[in-house]
Length: 70
Length: 457
Image (cartoon, each protein chain N blue to C red):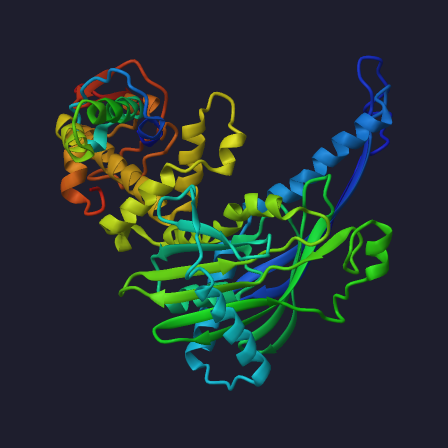
């Protein structure tokens, strides 16, 4: 996921509705790929990140449990 | 000591036209060295002789031999304890700094005074800001009148206490700052607990001779922080021999062959910002010596100023996940966006970003802990389903093998799942997908029964 986030290329990305503990490597890549699109389609970076987190259930889990995530 | 040699056993292995016999002899000598802190040290010496036989040219055989010797380097990397060694020395230095109440002589006071004057150089001068790789570091350069050598200044915020930073910087030969271009780095003289003489020889590009630097480092406590000053020095231990320099067309050369003596005066102010953070201000005025034009040195000033970024990243990497807050995560996020050296050598099928992530997850303690936590939670999740399945079989006296097929697409594919048997004594192990399967939640559990059971599902 992190490597896709860093790559930051605009590509369509699907939804991943899995829990954090059951996300696979491939699904992680899909989630990471979605950030670039979310950032491009919002006026501010904060709104883009919000959209990205709300879109994927596992990121919401991470946001709630880890103080450092956002 | 370990010795290996090929036997000339022609009876058991007779000569054959389909292959050539290689003669090989090697000797490995392991010698125990003194401990560094609590870390053990061993000196490994390898002597090797290989005769490839056949028609392989000697030059090719030599190259193969060098490749074999790289194994020692790999061994060193495997048992690397650089972090532990640095931590031990840092702890010792922190104790020394807290106990320090030594007096400063006149020469040391002059060094400190001149060093601290360097911070005022930028006042009233037109400075040009430099674009640094790290957004957390601000750097600028400025020129004095009638001096072609530039002054450079960089500031950054480190997530550590001033004492920690000072203790780390006082370990001049620390492993964390070793670079490929460092040919030699040593402490020539330890005058007292706040005054040392440091020698450093650097490799320069092939068209330019190597450079060496000799500087006296002095530190002192100032308010809620410290000042560390390095000023160029001359010493009999590392003399400058002018005759060698004249022969090679350079003005001054050191005693070391093909190394020109340069100057690297610097001053660093380490100031407490808050409970968690420390501000670093670093001023340098380098002169490579010899015939290197000053504009080339100015061009590479940014890389010298990135030293503060290295310090910042080093302390960030030491912080564990339990110490992380939003600022740490932001700092790590910025580090993640900076290209690393490892990206230049990706493995087959890997892209640059993956290599960077792999390197950073290995380097940063916090990221490593996140990865471990994810693996642990994933295992716990898998174990829940495995235990559920085991509960179904606990009444049967049978042995079974369980596999999560989701593991086949995860990076933890071959991770054995170990847990205690819940009720009775079924034995289970990881195996490839078997004949009978059962969908259980998000995971497909494959259960292979080795015993007899009428209610196997």
